[in-house]
Image 1 (tube, rainbow, N blue to C red):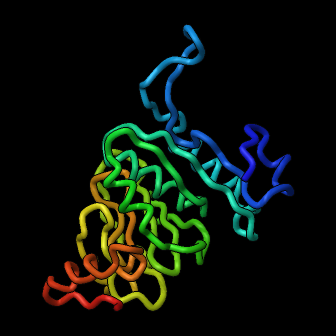
Image 2 (cartoon, rainbow, N blue to C red; image 1 turned 30 degrees about the vertical axis):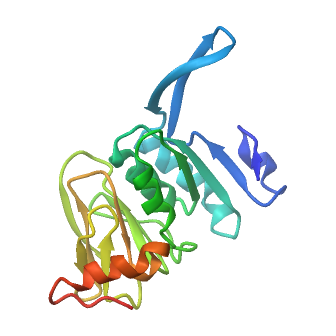
Length: 212
């Protein structure tokens, strides 16, 4: 893995993976006694910049290249879900550190979406991407949105990783958007070590058919 800074694409032919450190979230630091000091976590890229990065890196990652985004997250769970979903829209690998919400990190690390099975798509302002084991969607605004988007092939239902809400696939479509700036949906089998309990909780809700 190469942590090369900018321009990253100069080095894309070397190593197994390129790291984009502090891709969306970083720690604000300043020079101080003995080195850099600072603890405040800040978002360093807004949606227009993130979208531009997704487009610029697509020729590399969509043809087999590997990019891992390293995020230094603040303590609120939404930042973790937002960064994960954005990184998955880019078909990036994701890794993060957070001083507080390690429970959220464990949940996201257990997702097994695999490599993207289709390109970035947009419908009514909501961006989404399909994976063999689920999908990621981002509403980049603070306004509520409710959009019916095509679901991944051969998936009967999805579950919101943040809430465990079961989202049935109706007519080949799933509801995406919501009130927050992210949504990560996965079939229960893609939840890694937590798959059995996650699927059991989801199946306990009547009328929802989920893949086993």
